[in-house]
Image 1 (cartoon, rainbow, N blue to C red):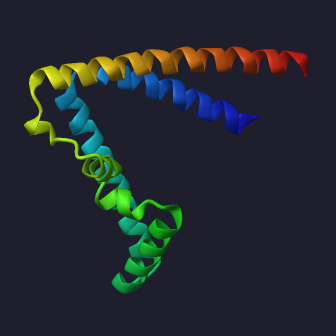
Image 2 (image 1 turned 45 degrees about the vertical axis):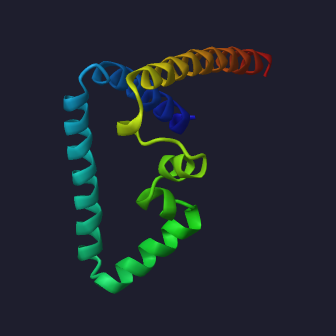
Amino acid sequence: MLTKKIIEFFDKLENKVRRKLSHYPILYAFIGGVGVVLFWRGVWHIADDQGMSSVLSLIIGSVMLLMTGIFVSAFVGSKLIISGLVGEKKIEEKEEAELETEEMQLKNLQRTLKRVEEKLEHIDKEVEEKK
């Protein structure tokens, strides 16, 4: 129960922070970049503290990424693969009207997803009340 509350807290906090930072993309990128670097610095130091060799790190990391299906998406990116499969233009090749249309579609999808999430939360509450 405590784990669920902690997850819910950070989920709500993430939504608030993302909403605010999305208006300041350079600040958002800077904070995100610092967070990523500090995270990997911690991983690096833990591996060093455990006496893990470079080769062993490479092998363990590769196996973990391959097992979880993250290997290709981490290094190539699923959006890049999908855009290549469907013959989509690169962002710099798209016209402004195309980008605005895609942005509107994304906003519509976000609104729809928000409504679905709200309905699911409502259903979850009803199920919890019946227990």
